[in-house]
Length: 363
Image 1: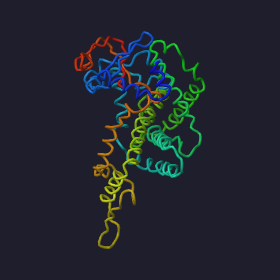
Image 2: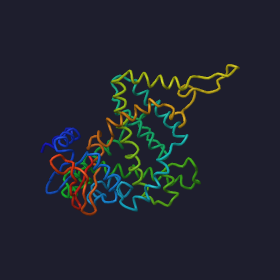
Image 3: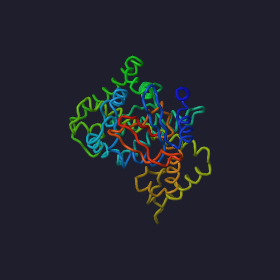
Image 4: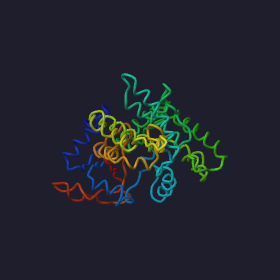
């Protein structure tokens, strides 16, 4: 009951963190006859995400619970199918195009206008900023939520994510519930939203692919059908928006709490990009942020800024800090009986056995 109370009050992360600290960072829960292993031990997380990655998979129950959010896209795939799909996404998500800076600048100015207003919720503005950038960069057209008072996509997605997270806690019992019964309007809106993006993408598909082709358009050129594209839209938004929103929001908070850090960050930009004039007093090297947009080589020079970002991630990793009701569990199940390197014994430093089909959640 304590767990469900914490979930209802949006304190699930804090409840989980406290329990894991008491039980050597790995524990087993029994929920309505279903086993759930939760861990935040770095060695176990490394095993799940790297060294033993192919021993775990998304379960059929998880696929059913998240089908109105993820469909059959990459987050629902396993094995070789996942590997092939990941290669398609990596070509776009593993690089930054010059046009991405222009897109970001435009939406950043809209965000700054809202943040300048008294009483504005900074997290709300950052979340809308990321939604606008991600939809334009990866889906070909921005939602422009920063310049609109209507947020139907965000509201519908948050509703379905909260329901799916609760259903996942119920294990096999949660599969029996259906989003169409619990939130029919949200399901209907997300389907129509995906369909509208897919329709516009296929309308652009008649044009030849180019270096600036967005992810969704590229998937069409590679033969993906309409259902695949609809699934890819929400998967892209979740992957591109939620983790970066969490990171930026905590960064915003930490910098505001440590003004001396912000002052040093600002000084670094000014020191690196002072205006350089030639002998005729003409600007020969326009200053970043003042006279021109940055390029990747510029950002690599900002060493202190980079350190601040890394420190923020160390303290507030998006997979840890974001409320479970917002993004759901990052859970896997073993495809066969397996062991995790830590969690057993009086001190939690011995390996533990995890049976096939047991849900493992990285907390």
